[in-house]
Length: 390
Image (cartoon, rainbow, N blue to C red; front, side):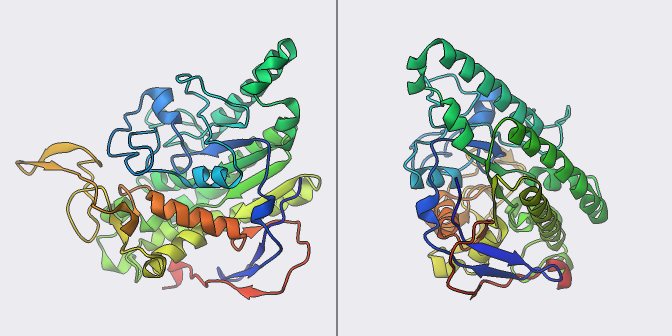
């Protein structure tokens, strides 16, 4: 099943992006099932179910009115994309409570997940390779159950659904993030090749299991997260004009360039499969750069945090917590209007920001796919610089 979405070309010599519009991309985002792999950017409750990680109020307050296992005040990008397909929200693979229905897909993403295998110090044991292994086991069990009882198709994806499903990926941010705490920038950049080799192995395993429709998100502007700025942005020479940390955004850009190379490699190696590359970095960086144009008032500061402007983030106290700070009781409360903030808790985006990002994804202007169809011509896209050039 081909995805008719817009295509952008990455110029090898620069980080400028040029977008090619094609016809009606949103209308073709239509699949019988979706299987998602990733981290907290798309975790709909996996970490909470898998290791009983406490995702407490005020998480979930905007849409679900209670915590839903999501690291957000409401819905994530993947939730809005599921809405666009008229499919229900994805149930986490590890959540067995509430009679989950997996007929239209399953979410293997877990907060804190990395591409590289987890170690004893990892927040999340469900790294990308484990998520892929979970999918293989899930598929084997589903097909075995359906062979015994066809009535279970009301709750489980059919063999045809597995073949026609969309396989989504949004992972790698935590590998880069964590590496900066123990490595130099050059060492972090050297790690990228290893990360993408591991990612390649996992995606090829899914291909061998029959997956044919792949939707790959690149990583966002890591250096614009309040937590990162608070830790690595104290030296003014190390931040850009937006207040984002140059080294982290440079690493994210380098990761994305090599990820795009991998995407191109997949297209050539598996011509019968459909691969789509989505430029999440550009969407989010554009939002942060031009926040007021989109109705936001705070592009960087956390909505739910402690410490006040400019970051409203303190690593000693997480969103919703009450602790004694400097001898006084302090609470990291949410802001009055989450729709005015891009960032939710110092690490994740608000529902309002996620809705904006998903709406931009669905235009097709930030996606590249081998299926071009007829296109109207060149549409200059937002031009983003590599922070290393500042």
